[in-house]
Amino acid sequence: MRRCDLRQYRSGGLLLVLTGLLLLSACALLEGGEESPPEGAYRVYYAVTGEQSTVQVVDWEYRIPSGEDTASALAELVLSQPETAGLASPAPSGTRLLSCQQEEGQLRLDLSEQYGGLSGVDLTVANSCLTLTLCQLEGVEEVYITVEGEPLPYQTMRTMGKDDVLLPGTGKGTLTVSVGLCFPRAEGGGLGVEYRDVVQNESETLASAVFTALLEGPGYPELTSLMPEGTKLRSILVEGGVCTVNLSPEFLAGVPEEEQAARLLLYSIVNTLCMQEELSIDAVQLLSEGRSVESIGGVPASVPLEPDWTLLES
Picture 1 (tube, helix red, strand yellow):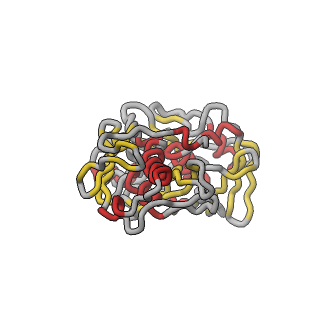
Picture 2 (tube, helix red, strand yellow):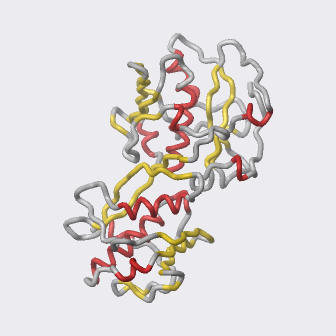
Picture 3 (cartoon, rainbow, N blue to C red):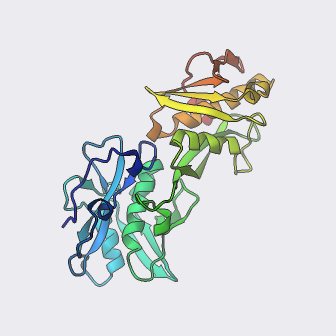
């Protein structure tokens, strides 16, 4: 059923960074041509598995949907296992299609509770597979996904069209990723989490995109930011489970004098970076202009700091 074999993509020109890397394969670009699909067949998109354990890859196979409702049948195919070795459904096992309705260019899918367990890269991959598959249908311009009738909790971009999903060779250099950001609670008493869709440019890493979003401050009124004004990200590197964050001198100059506030600022950074499962960060090392920071809010910061999850329970 496949039109081309899966390939090991190593060229940087074919890679789009998404945590590790999210790659949507366009085999026609590699093979220089396109043969006609079987009559009545559609491209059904799946996640790639196997050797590329650090790379999230999406590829497709031709499938012929059965039944009168083509949209429902295609969605069911994405939720089921493919016929091609090396591919797998991006949806959690047991995910069911509860309803499928099309209205004015929008296809609304309601899925069972298992789908609601997805977040970050896994959610982006699953949404992309459904969107790319279903936007092939005439009159379908975008896909809106709910879980048990409720919007997905980990993203703010509720609908996706085929132009929101990147394929190699499209010339687009951004990708939307759902992340969690830790900010101090406005009323005090610890940290709260804001889930947000972050735009990641092709030239930046996910860690950089996440920290840039943290610098922008919260969108929820019940949260606040203690980030010193003028703070800039000089560099950020994830290696061996440690994320090294190098900030401009405005950061240290503007750290709150009150110890608890300074501590919340510190762990809003550490917890945010460590909660991104795709980054596999165990600890965060803070630098200012390339130099280690002695302490912040009474917390020794000259060594990598592990997250303090108790602050999210306060």
